[in-house]
Image (cartoon, rainbow over all chains, first blue to last red; front, top):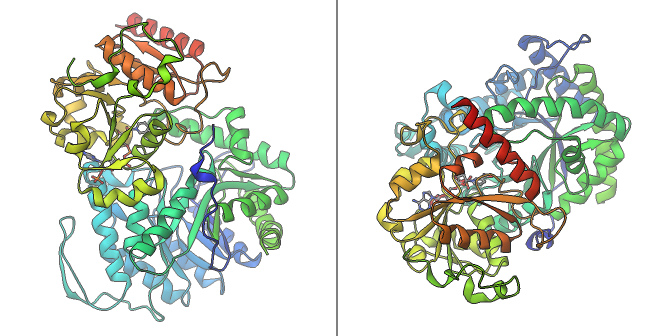
Length: 356
Length: 241
Ligand SMILES: NC(=O)c1ccc[n+]([C@@H]2O[C@H](COP(=O)([O-])OP(=O)(O)OC[C@H]3O[C@@H](n4cnc5c(N)ncnc54)[C@H](OP(=O)(O)O)[C@@H]3O)[C@@H](O)[C@H]2O)c1
């Protein structure tokens, strides 16, 4: 039984097609399959971002994490380094864990990135599904919902520019506060990443955030009702439509088989580690192949396979943007560079062709 | 048990055909309209149950969510949703449970889908007692309700796609644990009609076998494998105590 409601078409995308890459900064392994240092991982990510621009990728995003396997805790600094070596590619967080950060500081960091990059900054805000940042910064998980609600509201005010007056319970109030640097050409794009909570969809609609669907397991079609919910909420509020994006994990290699063989053992190992702390099941080859297939969430395969899957899912979800989260702990920097190159030179043009 | 409505059929009174009559499907109130609540509402509706859904506040806030994600369900205030329900499903985060007023649920059959897993959700004083399962602690607090544990060990994103008709070779099993046999039966019926084989466990204490870290947690297993995995865990448990 597949879900009936998710099969309906969603309103067609009226926004330009954007095809990007995201990384969580998974630590790569060297030729002897040993993890490289955090510093090396970060320098490699700068190279990956620069390559992404060279091969025609539209957006490069870095997800905030705070663990030994994902040492990318200060994404904006890395994005600044990439900005200095690129001219066109848009740069952003994917995601910023807003709940455990200060919205004023996030605004300052990304409006600074916007200045450094000549107006190429974006922010994707999330509640954080891995919650390592809560104890680190002294936040209480019991305040999880309240923290995000208040901070998303404050950040929406800050984004508009101009003096901000705000009062809440999770942060000191602001009165007619000018927050700098001012952006050059209006608010930079801001998104809310949603992993399956419809209340977050409504929140995004209410505070004028674009919607980023984080689809990391199971059938992408099951998110179609979320796109409808977003459009209907915007309509009900009497506001203009906003873009919808999709973020999903993937890996591209010359052939389907090569992509799977490179990706699967690493994926299984990474999930095995996460599963231990989260108490859930480790993927089997069978469940992996389901995720790689047309009804799963992973974009692993040859350029043609990955392009077809993207081109099939975007219209189904009413989305105009796709961000492939590349990399998986233990893959080599070389394999990632090759995946980026194939994504830019082969996948992107093919998706554009299929959707034109 | 009070408040079970018209679902209180005698054991063995109905064959599979008779279970399709609507009157045997008590109104189900889903508390929670986050990740899990609307999916639960949708599958219960599809199984023929009338459904109310409530979050912690004004139903107007979840009206659109209900229309789009669970059409046919009624968005209501939690107290109203519970008042005329035969089954109340708790799909709220465990850390919000201490704020839930037990009087609201007095006399009701309550399905507990919640989990306590400190590595992800942090330590919670009320639940931090390894001698008891989380549903036993829920039952202790909801002293005037009848608690049944199920649906905690399947991902909300699988709940819809993994449904299968009775008898399908790849039908997945879910455990249903509780101290009250009639309540367990009513919930097992719901699970079966939604599209899963219900494996009954005769106490909330045994429901500990369904908690995070168990070999059945988040794993798609058929009835035979499910029962076998439970039996294995049970023995290991005994052996180590
Ligand atoms: N995620 C899964 O795959 C899965 C599977 C099985 C079971 N579960 C369990 O389901 C539960 C909910 O998880 P979730 O991820 O769906 O949470 P969630 O997305 O955070 O949503 C929680 C919902 O609970 C509502 N709520 C909180 N307190 C309430 C109250 N006193 N009365 C009525 N509604 C209340 C919230 O409404 P407001 O916003 O109005 O406060 C919100 O709609 C958890 O205990 C989890 O263990 C999860």
